[in-house]
Length: 143
Image (cartoon, rainbow, N blue to C red; front, side, top):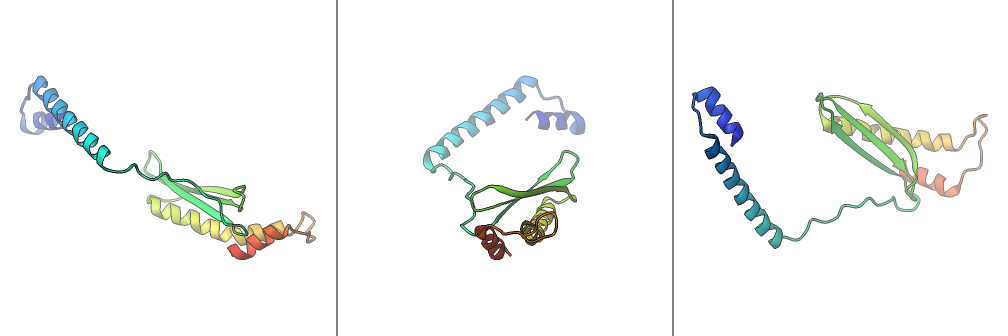
């Protein structure tokens, strides 16, 4: 109502009385309150969303994007094992559409999984080391 009053003053040179504007806003607020109470009493509460770890012998990529204050988008991902322990994470600032940013995060995560699995099988000298068989299974199943 305040915004509408402002527009009426600027564009139509009308001067609505401030008390009338406040009364209309309060009336709309009361109607909204009554409707939300009725809807709350009639509908079941929304389901709780809970993160679940990957099934045994799988890796899980969680990714999400967000829009920054300047309109650019960022995204990130975390790769976790079946215990929920993080194995790798990354973020990027990529573009002006959040879905594209999320797509980049998912693609990066998919590309990193085989590399992560390959790195896990070698030590720093380049010699292959024994790998926990459950991790090796996770890599094979994830790829």
